[in-house]
Length: 418
Image (cartoon, rainbow, N blue to C red; front, side):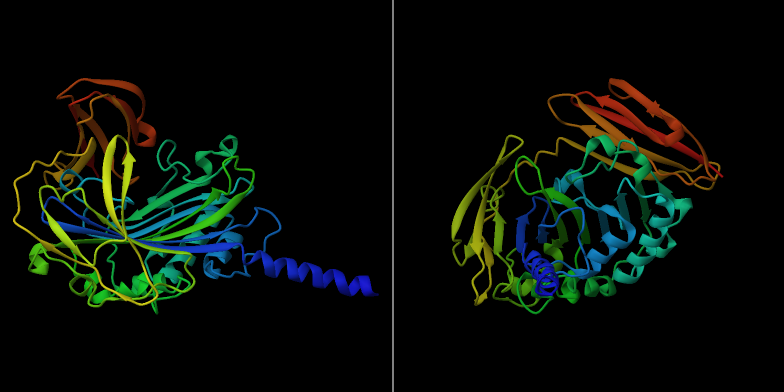
């Protein structure tokens, strides 16, 4: 009799203690751009050390319960969502921390034991529509594709089970991003918008920017280097690009950017940091107030970047900058970027032009994916202004793979017919 009473209590305590195997971090990156803009990127990450089997996702601690129910109900392996207003100018601004297409974008990897991926995909889209107050309910078979080479898994997966039959991708480029999308986003955070960096997410200031993007990235990650066990990571990001012409000055501060200062860190966060990119300080010198806690150096891809780091205290903090006399400087374009635009008019003379530029010193393999409506007939005209080497083609799947040699330009002209 005692054993029958002890066993349920043991399993209950086991489930309770498993909820504590999570951590929440909040970070803010401020990066002055060379083209009279200021890039601001919020990143909130919640990591939950849970296994892939015998897990009840309904009982969570810091991890959003709504996301846990989505994983369990729809057998989702990875989930990526973005709601974006404006265009990211790669040629002038370089690369963002997280890429996002204009409008609404969603793509998901399902677990290998899913019997009907299309049904789960449709149910997932409807669920996300209600959760984020977006038009994901318009996602159906007519605007959904299963890329074979693009959008590979970003988390820890068994690559032997990776197949494009388990991925679904859809985009709604005409989706309008508004304050209704930001409110449910903030509710997924442990501290909501009451404290921490999330308190700076003022919709009146966020949507008065040249570019704004809200994104969610859900994926499994390795707990150790050997990857014998995995954790579940929910990463929520907000990317903003402020225009100095709209701000009225190059001197920025929390008050000008967000309408208020930062009233301490989130009490549930294990790490709360602010980083200011100092890469433009030589040509555009500025002074930070207050002084940073430390200067850290990052080396990625051969590029050395210095950051001013602030550890957010439990009390009020406001960071500001004041610029000195500007100096002339040259901005190198990113190694690889592209642009796309519409030409012509009507259904007979309309077309889409895609240009890809390789400024890197070596050749780069490029995968070009075009999602074209099923009712449109088309043919491609490839203008080789420079030399290319084709690896493979797949016109029936609307993708092309080629090798772009250094300092060369690729132009693809797609003619559309109804």
